[in-house]
Amino acid sequence: MWQNIYNKLKKNQFLFEELVKRDFKQKYKRTLLGMLWSVLSPLLMLLVMSIVFTNFFGRNMQHFTTYLFSGWIVFNYFTEATNGGMISLVSNSSIFTKVNVPKYLFLFSKNVSAAINFGIVLIVYFVFAAMDGVNFTWKFLLLFYPIGCLAIFNIGMGLILSALFIIFKDIQYLYSLFTQIIMYLSAIFYPATAFGELLPLFYCNPIYVYITYFRWIVIEGIVPSLQFHGLCAFYAIVVFAIGAGIYKKYNYKFLYYV
Image (tube, rainbow, N blue to C red; front, side):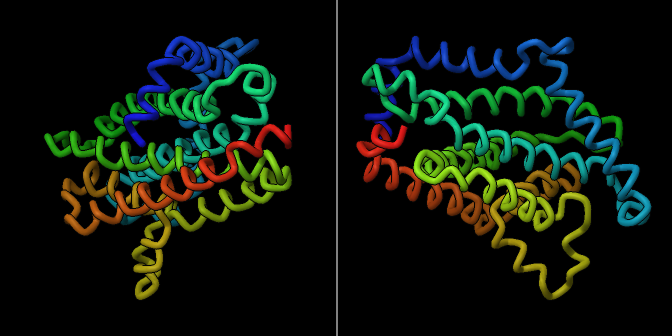
C-alpha cells in the first residue's frame, strides 16, 4: 500500500507541490503580517493562558509556561491538520471531478501545510523553552517520534472526516464541538495528576498521550517507556487504518455527492 501511495505521489508530484503552495498562500492571503500569524497566534494564546491559569495551577509547577506551550502547539497542530483535512475534498471537488487524480493528494497537501506551520511554531517553542530555563539534551531528538505518530494520526483523522463531510455536512459542527471537548480533556492548562485515580483514563485520549510525550522529554528529561512508545504508535496506526479502509471502500462514491 505504501509503495502504491508513493508511486502515485511521485507521478503527481507537480500537482502535489502546487497544492501545498496554494494551501499555504491561501491561509495568509490579503493579510498584512502573512506568515508571522503562524507565530503570533499561538503566542497570543499562550499569553492569555499564562495570565489566566498561572495563578491557579502554575504556582507550584516548574516551567509552567513551557508546560502550557507544549500542550497548545500539539493540540493546535492536531486541529489545524484535521480541520483542513476535513474540507479537503469538498474544497477541491472542481479539480477531481474533471481530472482523474488520487483524491488523497488534497488531504496530504493540507497536512503538509499544517506541518510546515507546526515547524515554524516549534522553533518559537524551543526559544521559549530556553528562556524558561529548560535544559536541552540529546533526548530532544526523540521528539521526532511523537511528531511522526501525530502526523500519521492526523492523516487518518483527515481521511475519516473528509469522507464523512462530503456526505454529511453536519460533521463540521459536530467536530468543532468534539475538538473543544478534546481540548479540555488533554490537560493543556492543568496537571492531569490532580485527578488522582482517574489519571489512567487520560491515556485513552491520543492527543494527551502525544502532549505528555513532549512534556516528559522537554520539561522532565524522561524517556518514555517502550509501552508508551507502543501506545503512541497504536493510536496512529489504528486511526490511519480506519481512515484508509473508509477511503478504499467509498472512494468511488465521492463523485456522486459533490
